[in-house]
Length: 372
Image (cartoon, rainbow, N blue to C red; front, side):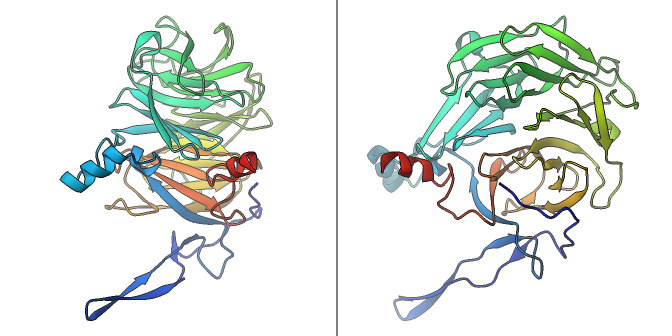
């Protein structure tokens, strides 16, 4: 669980290099080499750190156990062997240490199983073959819902990537870009981005099991409940549905039945404003995480839409905490944050300050308990 104060955390910068944690003097011939370990803390002192940058994932080699054949190839050729990297990642969903990422170039969902040290490509063949996967969500039961923008449908897999079913069609969906499932697994909420030449900018509510369309919400516009090029969607544990209404520079919240609950945000360049809101997620405490592609960061709000803090900055290098084209975001059961950058083709992971490195699903804590 995250425990953020219900006030703005005034940080003087997007990140902080938290000193030299350890300095090792290692002899190398007649010279000594200094090795320093740095910790990225958010926000910087004198405020209390709430998150630490933990790691970056770029390819299967960041999670998969390297085989003897891989080691031999690395030794012989200097290459990464059979590593499979991210092409153009967009959406992300996480469950029990498994990270699922939609990739529009690879036309697939890439699964990084961190505790299981495994990697898998999902949705490349058969009835579940994907064309342009963008939005993604995973239920508490492990069903993976993927919004296929080009095929104009929602495709459902089990947690191991086996095709289960699909719903939606070209007569209903035009440009589905986001999907989220209610906590009880009964409703699937789908955002249809529409386009600049159409008024069909909608939030659809489907029966998540049968695929039956239950309700259509909104049209293109600025009123509460209407949309302008909405992009992504998430559902909080209390059932509140949050949508990044990108062209209106705001986040809209809806009750489980689709009735409008509230809106927040406005266009601007200050912290708390939006320039290009894209990915959105919530955590177990009900806080709301909004990626802004133009700012190169994500902002964290409480459920009353009060800004708590922000993390990240726009940068020209793929360094930790720097983003050129951030897109999807997810928060796991333990409070870790996962953010995707399309340009740098990476996933950055942040750990809440109260969680130790080896704790939680990503740290393998649950596997250790199961094997003890």
